[in-house]
Amino acid sequence: MATAENYELNYSKLPFEGILRRYRQRNIQESLNRHVHKNILEIGCGEHPIFQDFDAFDKMVVVEPGDIFYERAVSLASNDERITIYHGLFENILDQFKDGPFDYIIIGGFLHEIDNPDEVLKRIKEVCHTNTIVHSFVPNAKSFHRLLAYEAGLIQSIYEESKLDALFGRRTVYDVVTFSELFELNGFSVIEKGSYFIKPFTHHQMEKLLSGQIIESSVLDGLNKMSAHFPDNGAEIYISAKPVL
Image (cartoon, rainbow, N blue to C red; front, side, top):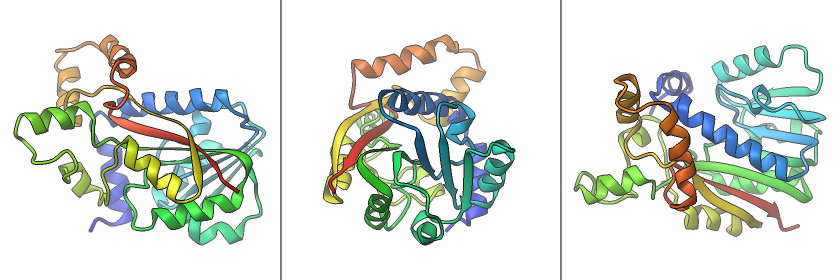
């Protein structure tokens, strides 16, 4: 199993991830703009905390378990007194801080990588109020590129472990239905769900298409907009939910 440090280094080197992150952050920001977001909690910010791109908040708490990503978040936050950053697993350090309840909670793309997603969601309810929005995202089993690989005979099932899944120790491959069920079974009501960015090929293949100038960067926005035509088949799926208190 990869160490936490190896995970962070591998993630930072992942081809095409920077491109996909752009559309992931756009999806989060669009959701933030639709809901109250004065007091925000981000759990698992990775190497790109949301406060880098979004400034319209009164207070933000960030929880990040990775050493490298935590140090980066601290450096990026600089002297912004609105931002507090904690180091550790959310479910382990929740009792250490008295922040909240929060208006908006971002669960970084890690629920598919852990053995205890139910425990994490139950602990998150402890820092919610009635109208809190919880937003999360994970890779999509029904992503166009997985469906293509299945129909081409390269994989036996769209739910089987990919090379990236193995590299990052991922436990579960969700689709929109099963990701919604995860939240509903743990006391949340799903209010928005869908996917974004139609990714025809793997991360490595997409990177080669761009670096070889086979496709232009202008095509990328078109691929993101294509999710309007194929709402279940984007590279990543997202959920916005409210707690049932």
